[in-house]
Length: 158
Image (cartoon, rainbow, N blue to C red; front, top):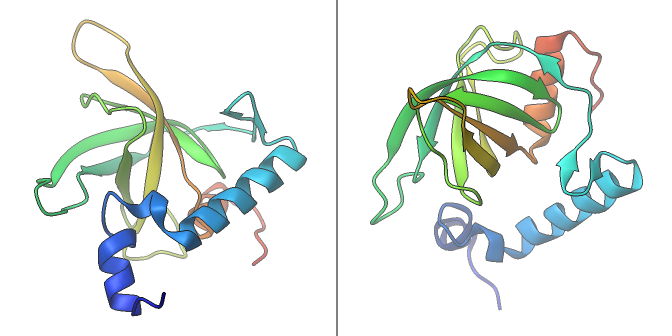
């Protein structure tokens, strides 16, 4: 059954139903297969080299969908890699939720207006009594890997 692109994006890509999108499933399966083949993911954890970096990030939960008010929170990275990041914030993120992450213009010279991506929350835990949390996000976005590579000064190929 053909669904026009705008309708497809509205129904799947921009909603909580994104995991039911055929294109998302194909890319997700392909990335998982590549990651398993090259040893990037073992026992559900990323094993790409992580760089300790404290980078400000603006988080968006709810993604502005109908019935889901958009909530924002400030955070910063604890470590970052080409496949994800560990964040620290005052926000308790629910495991299994997709959140928007916006980096400011200083993040990457290739992104003078800042950079936005979506990350999947793999875990979140409290780190102290003051309401601080750390969360592990995986990001399956080629643009994210390129922006991180640029930030870290790595040579990245398309």
